[in-house]
Image (cartoon, rainbow, N blue to C red; front, side):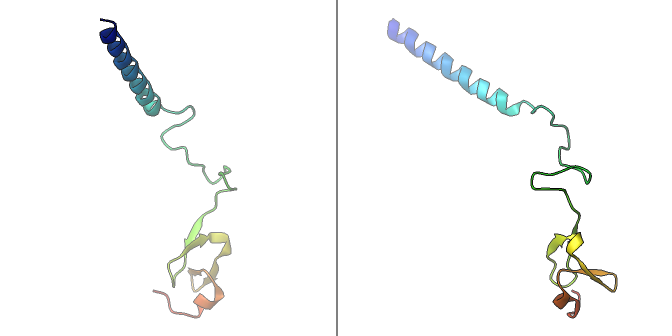
Length: 86
């Protein structure tokens, strides 16, 4: 009889632990809204958030502040300005 009670208690504890873990995973984190990404005026984990630009020649994305602009297009380097856009 004690073996039966032991196994029942063990199963109940396991079920409770699994339910608790699932409930903790499903619960929303404090301060987490529908969109928690930092905006342009906020600071991200590695620094201020900056707009990205795409090179007209190779398609690589890079910070817009580093863009080389020519003929209304953004390029990642002066060498790509001399090459034709895709």
